[in-house]
Amino acid sequence: MQFVLSFLTIFFLLIESINSVSFHLPHNTRKCLKEEIHKDTMVTGEYDITDLPGLSTHLEVKDTKGHTLYNKEGATKGKFAFTTEEFDIFEICFETKLPYGQQPHLTERHTTKEVTIQIKHGIETKDYDALAKANKLKPLEVELSRLEDLSAAIVSDFAYMKQREEEMRDTNESTNNKVLYFSIFSMCCLMSLAIWQVLYLRRYFKAKKLID
Image: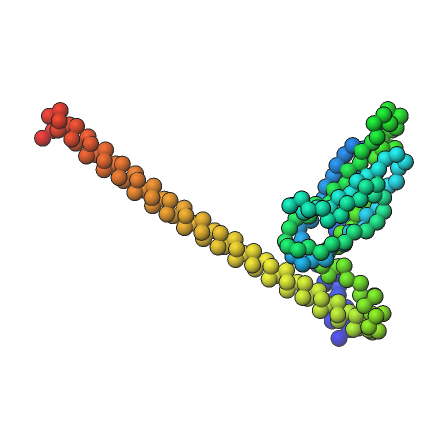
């Protein structure tokens, strides 16, 4: 039993994703990260930005509709959290601006920041250590709870993928039907035009007495 639990734990850890990104941000530069999140999902982020005197960084988290979920001027180190209300693509943007007049006196080393951010969502945000302490759970019970939550998350992801597949199939079928009807309509128009041309030319030739 313990071996099976250990195997399942390793398996789920392999498929579990925690997005940790690190990059350099020069002055007067804006960089954004995009994350596609499901509906009713808890999202947490932890960031660490190099602190340089006189050079501040603006951090903003927003959705595709322009709603601001987190906004921090002069961000250096901290955390943010929010819960999604619907499926959407969320954007996390960092922007560093150098105050006017300072650029000639600073080198690139003094105007480039290193940004590190770790994003978690869904089951990744749950603190099982705190849950174990609050409910006085044994390590085996904590692992079972964790595996149960991971299994539920995987089932939910498969259900969502199935729903998207059904939506795409319905869209393809609807598009095929529209193309079929348009093709039939085009053929009818071409046939009607061809028949009209034949009748017109026949009357014309008869009027010119070129045919009987």
